[in-house]
Length: 71
Image (cartoon, rainbow, N blue to C red; front, side, top):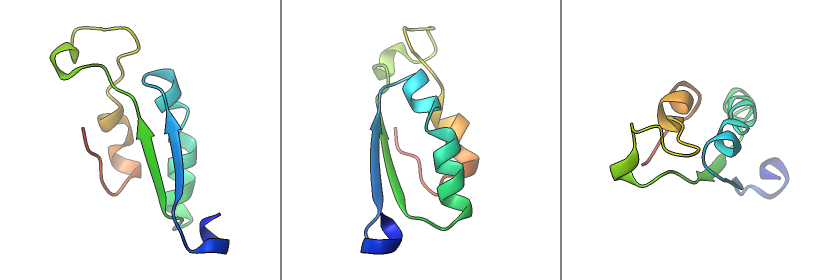
């Protein structure tokens, strides 16, 4: 999509397993210089670190394969 339109691709995933399923696609996009915006869910900030349902440290998981991460 990005190569043919010049616009970044956009994907949305739920927190936890949905976000981790994006890891391969994000790595491929980075290696191929394809612009991509990925939006994922996350547990409320006050629950981070409490083993909440579908809590995954997605920022840490994707830090090496993304240019920017926002929480």
